[in-house]
Figure 1: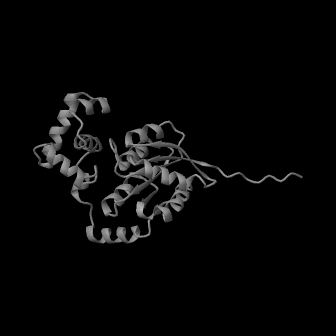
Figure 2: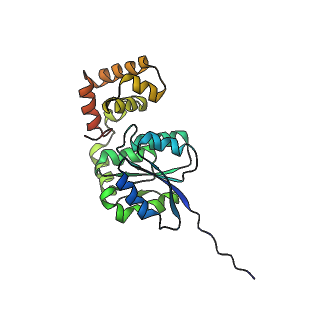
Figure 3: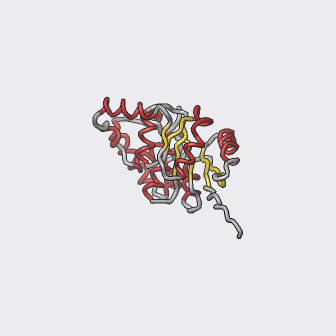
Length: 221
C-alpha cells in the first residue's frame, strides 16, 4: 500500500513597499516558509493594486505610506472589488489612525515594522487561514479609543475615497494634468475636486492641502 502525505498549499504573496531594502528583508523572512512564497513586488500602491487585480495573489503585505496610493487605499479598493486576496498592513506608525484605518478597509491584520521579525510570520499564517491578526498592543489601543471616543469623529467621514485619492496626488506634487491622466478623468474634473477639497477643508492653497494630507497620514512628511 502506498501512503500519500497531504501537500501544503503554498500561498502566493505580494510585497508592496517603496523601500527596496525592506522588501528584500521581508522576502528573506518569508521565502524559507514551506507555505509562503513571494511571487511579486510593488514599489507603490497603484502598482500593487494592478498586480492584485490579476487575481493570482493570495496575500498582499502593504506598507501604509506609499506613493500614488497608500496601503489603506489599496486595501479599501481590494475589499470594494471583492477580490480574493487577504491583506496585511505593515507600518512604522504606532497610532490609532492607521490601526483603525486598517480595520475599516477589511485588512486581515496590522503589523508594526519594529515588531515584524516577531509578528509578521504569525500574521501571514493567520491571514492565509482567514483569521485576524493585531500586534499585541493593538487590543488595548482599541479599548482605549472606544472608551474615549464613543462615537466616530466627524472628520473620518469628511472626504470621499475619490477626494482622498486626489488629495494624496496633489500633496505628492502632481499637476492637474498628471492626475487626470493617472485617474482617467478630465483636467476639469480634477480642478473641480480640488476646489471641493479646499471648500470642505476650509483651506486656500496646495500648501495647506499638503499639510492636511500629512496630518491625516496620506503621505509622509
